[in-house]
Image (cartoon, rainbow, N blue to C red; front, side, top):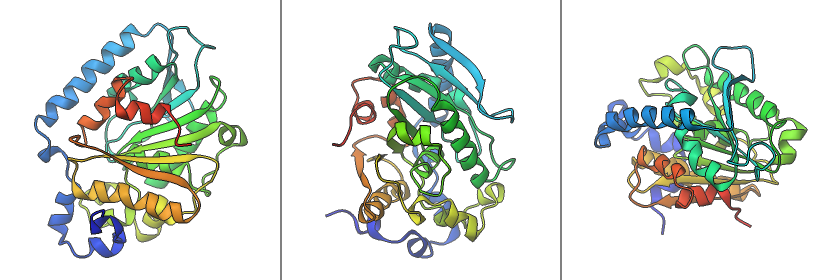
Length: 291
């Protein structure tokens, strides 16, 4: 039987923790050995992947703001040989990083034959989380006009929130995007933002109760005709495991095709390294379909 914490409504569970413990519950870096080394390696690996890319377009706009940019990578055969388009959205609690810090994560899917778009977006506090979600809608709608085949989304942490929001019926995805989008993979994603209201980081997010609910995928009706997989590491903080267990439970009851996949011995940082290996469990989840 799954741990009871997976089944507890977020707003109720969170009130049982004093604020200091709640901040700790969502803290990753201090619980991951050599966390700073991980981040330095990301930048080095990303720079190397960009410099070696033979079929790529860099810093393409999907909107007018400086960070509304994407990079697009094609498989070895170049444009027209791809099996589909994968859009990858970085994490960082909506406060940090850009596509340039995670370019290397495209390597596994490119090796599988996918075209891959890496997305940047305006960060908080310059943008509210709801505004970042709308930027993501613009990015997905823009990218629906590129490459061929199905479109899939994968996002890590805050990026997991953003891609899961694309499966909510309130997001204004274009008919072209909806016709192509068939699978969303939220990796260690945040799906109930009401749980984050008491966190110290909310001084930058400026979430209030209304926006937290509006930006929580768990509070929305899911679209059908596409799949959601919530992937989380077995060594992650318990709140991340809970956040990725509860959304599929709710959405399955609303008719969506979705499930949670626990990857043993992976933490919040190590889990995304699987995206660089085309044969890893995570890469296979992104590449295949549930049905």
